[in-house]
Image (cartoon, rainbow, N blue to C red):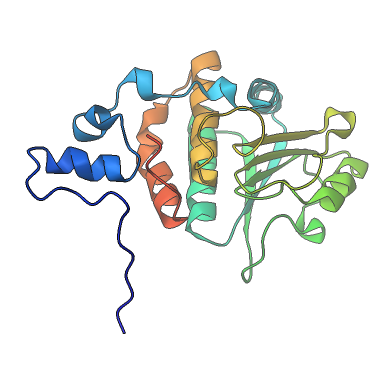
Length: 224
C-alpha cells in the first residue's frame, strides 16, 4: 500500500512562480541564491566554528615541524571523502610530510588505539572521535595530540585535557549550519587554513568531495 503525507502548504497549481513556491514549501526563503548562484553573503566564516583557529594553528605547527600524522579513515562515504580532502590538501601543501592512513577492516567508527603506530605525533579523526573520551585520554597518556574534525552529536562535556585534544564539531558552539557532514567540516578547516596561511592548491578544488560527503550522509541541504 502506498503511503503518503500531504504537505501543509500545497503549491497552488495556478501559481505564476511554482519553483519559488516549491522551495518555500521546504522553508527555503533565500531562493534567489538557490535559483541563481550562491554569493559570499551566503557563506559562513569558517572561524565561527568553535576551536577552529587554534586547530589550524596546531596543524600548521605540526606540518612546519615535520611531525608524523596518523589519519584514521571512517568506513563510509563521508569518512572517505573527509579523509581524502585532508590528505590531498595537506600533501599538496607539504609534499614531504608524513601522513600515514588506515582503513577500517569492517564498519568500525573512530580510532582504535592499538592500530596507532608508536612513533606518531598527531592522530587525525575526520568524521569521528568527538565522543571517544576514553581513547582521547589514552592518546594523551602516549603524548599524542588528537585533532577531531567531526559533525556527530555530542551528549557530554568534551575533552580538553592539557590542550592536546582539538575538537572542531559543527554541533557545538554557535556555528549556524548544523547540517555539515564530516567532509563539510574538513572543507571549512582547509578554507580557514588557506585564508590564514595560504595554500599551494585552491581549497575550492575540494567542493566536489565535500558535496559528495554531505549528500551521501543524507544531510539536510536546505541550509545554503
